[in-house]
Amino acid sequence: MVPYRRDAYQIILNLSEIYSKGELKRVTNREKFTNEYGDSEKELDDDFRIGVSIMNKTIKLYSPFSNSDLIVASPLGLRLAIEKELEE
Image 1 (tube, one colour):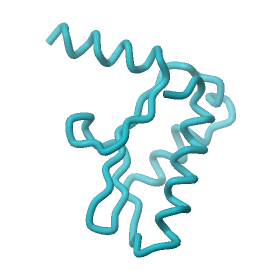
Image 2 (image 1 turned 135 degrees about the horizontal axis):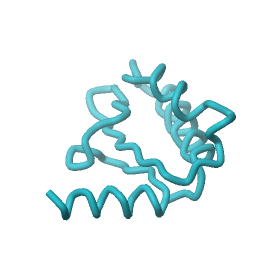
Image 3 (image 1 turned 90 degrees about the vertical axis):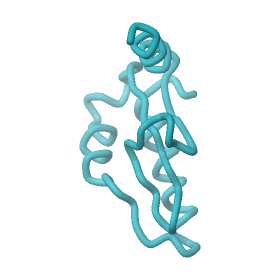
Image 4 (image 1 turned 45 degrees about the vertical axis):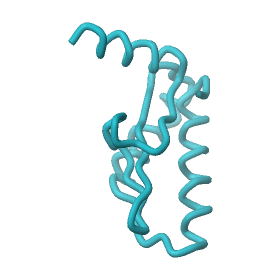
């Protein structure tokens, strides 16, 4: 859990860098992630969540929460996701 979108961006970049030193071959949805999280106008946004799945030498960004190995979210983003799930 992190407070701002810029922090989530840095965590995912660090994770990608760590895995790229090993046998990681690919990061899916990297361009979408960079567009949504690397935008300086949104860096202080506090409503976000992103699922991350790591398998077969691949980091998959925007994986469904139920299939994610890691969820990076703000407190508000996580709360809204839980409320939405409870409504369904």
